[in-house]
Amino acid sequence: MMAALQGSAVLGRALVLDTNIVLDLLVFHDPATPPLKQALDQQTLRWLATAPMREELARVLSYPQIVKSLAYHGVAAAEVLAGFDAQASLVTVAPKASVTCKDVDDQKFIDLAVQHQALLLSKDKAVLCMKKRLLAQKTVVLTAMESIAV
Image (tube, rainbow, N blue to C red):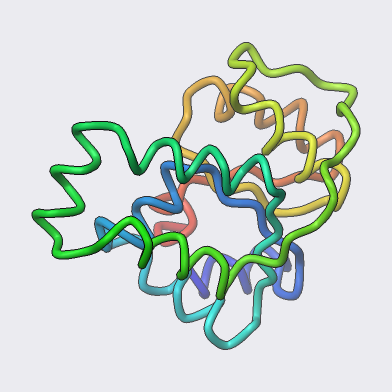
């Protein structure tokens, strides 16, 4: 991911992570996330989030299939939330962006990324299909896998 970020000239930019990417990073340890973790640990990228994003994560962590995954990976929901709290910079909720996502639950990520002209990491199809419209708003959308592959 770092090579992709350097090649894309987005180092130092703010970063918004959707809930699936947060789960990949803090629970599933997806093979695509170690460079992201390194960039966050080194503060090369600044992860921006809002209270509603944290609330969504807390809610998702209580879903039965996620509870099973937490147990399988030996991670407690409280540890995931502590990881979020330690790495994410909480900011105020962004105003509605001029672009609208088909999935209402994803709008908060888009709004925040647009407001801060941030890199947005997502695996959500409703977000990924908005890449061109978001690029016009100076917001780059990538999946973690894309960012490594570039």
